[in-house]
Length: 176
Image 1 (cartoon, helix red, strand yellow):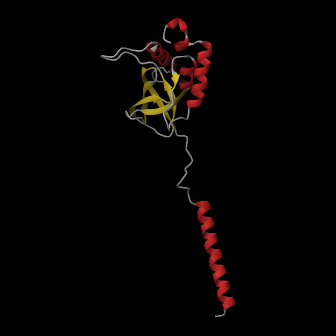
Image 2 (cartoon, helix red, strand yellow):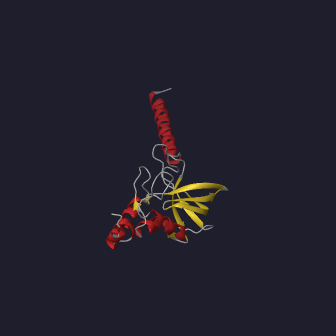
Image 3 (cartoon, one colour):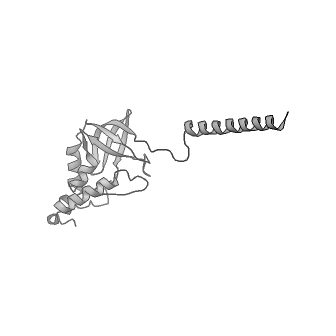
């Protein structure tokens, strides 16, 4: 076989390898940097625990859900006093999420916290409850990396509550 023919086969083989690599790169899923997916599920409110935690029925199971990027004052627990405005935050959330309500849960990077609670944004009848709690002054924005999906909207909502001196930010309630 002549040099020209061997060179032709080599060029053809090299071209086929490059084409195969290009096809693989284009069609195979990228493993290094997956796109974050917005995962949502429908659930039914069972009851409100406190100003930032609820129980829902999710996939036939009773599930504890902690509202993502929200921190409400604590209510009293055995041997531990409650925080200022904790009872008000709990009542407010219970009004917003009546038992039996069908809600949408939206998750972030980590679906569960270290206590086994689901972490989610909750929407009820088109209202984003996490944001409503913060903008009304019943809770504050909270950032816990890597779950920061709703943090910036919560910061904006908190600034709104601070300007309006609403809830926790009302000087008359003695909380701040």
